[in-house]
Each structure stands twice: as structure tokens, then as C-alpha cells.
Image 1: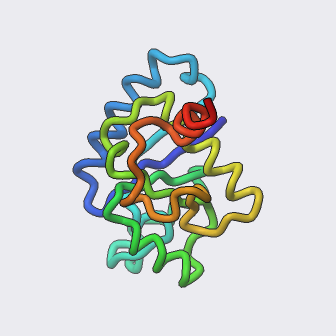
Image 2: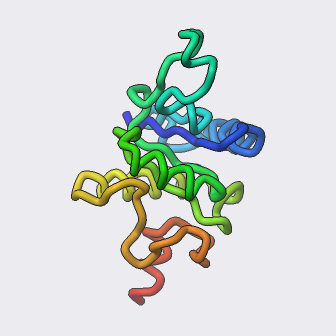
Image 3: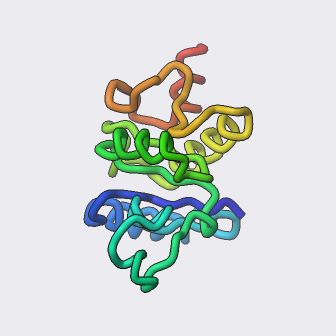
Length: 150
């Protein structure tokens, strides 16, 4: 089972996106093979007063990969530099965020996990996309790369 977190800072956009993707997931071929949920980015490693009080637990062990909204690029770099991330974290390109469907999310997550397993550090980037904010694709990286190869 592939376990995917959709992460955001405050949670409005990513929780909405996760709900939309979960509706698509129920009607897709992935429904028995993928688990997807919204997790606030700081909840991955336990950074907030609620964590300090013991009311909320760290959640990295609940998912295999975190796909994050574009504005988390620099917080993700900071968290990685501080050694807080044990799972691969990927910043979704601006053009994809909120528009990518469940098939694209699954493809991105699979490809990010493959890069991570081959030694790419956090936040994980595709070699030809060193910054998510400059990516111009509107499909998964896998599909975009295949269209460029033609």
C-alpha cells in the first residue's frame, strides 16, 4: 500500500485537495493500493506547542511520502537541513497544485519514492526540475518526460 500525505502550512488548500483526491481515489483503479490523507507539514515531525504538550504525535511513520504545496519549498529545505525528515518530501509545482488528479498524484509519489530510494536527498527534486516554482508542466513528471522523449 502506498501511503501519501498531502501537506500544507495551514491546511485549507491541501485539506480541500486531499478531500477531492480521496473522492477520485474511491472511483479509481488505485482504491485498494493507495491511502491518501491531509497532514499539516509541521505535523510530520512534531513542531508546535500542541506537540510539546503531548496532545499531538509526530506523523511521519504514518505515510511513505509527502507531497507539499508550493509555498513550502523553503520550510522543507530548512526541515531537511535540520534532519527532521525521515521520509521523502516533494514540493508540487505551482501549475500542478490543486489541478493534478489522483493518477498524477500516484505517479508523482511513486517517482519521488524511486528517487529517494536511489539516494536523492530531501526535498526530493527531479534532476531536470531543481526548483518546483520554475516547473512549467501540467501533468505528472513521468508523463511530461515521456512527451518530451517523443
